[in-house]
Length: 327
Image 1: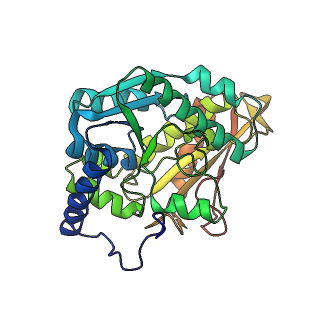
Image 2: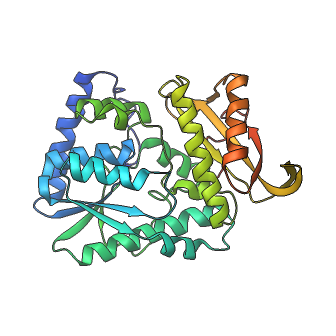
């Protein structure tokens, strides 16, 4: 039987009772797979890796080592938030790795989306291998792979760092307890595990982070434009009652410039693309009807507060024909 194929008879997890049954089943399976060995987990702070962390903490306790890699592709304030929540509040065994320059140097000049994803995924693994060598007994790598990751990789839509981006000489056995679940199911399981709402209902964030929202070859100026414009978008959605109502919203910055005017002077700067979509399982998505007045306000803030930007666009395309992410 294909372990990456969700059984046709598998019931959709929609209730706390079904979630608890899944949790009990996975804790037993994890203990059987891992024994008394140690597991290394890439902990981004997103719902997928957080649910995996909570499952593993229940199953193996301190034999879980969580590694948070700051690769320079995270949203504004996220590295600090991950440390606060997991190390200070949840008392997790957390290793923080500052690898910003390492990742951006590897990605310099790389424009092809799949190549970027695979570089980011492979470099993640190298970082984990280095951290593992500092520890005794690490034999497993845990990942927050979910079922849409597998489906889209199988269908050739895009390579995922936790599906198609792993190096062939991987030194770890994989642990992927939620790989047959859809995103909505992962959230139900997270609630049943007692994770805080701001983590369970946090909007999805791709494994390669802002690396797939800084379109084309990543440059530091465009990366900062993505980070700062995204922070403005999230702040305004929260202030205007859209946080939690809209499934995923973010900005992307392409690798071309357009002419504009700032303070009466000609500018040649980047556009920012706003994307806001709703979905149940990430397989299809509809575009959120964001009030026009709010879009105008966000546009004004982005064009006046974010450096190297003079234009804002709104993406009206559903999935299909577009994917949720641009790359």
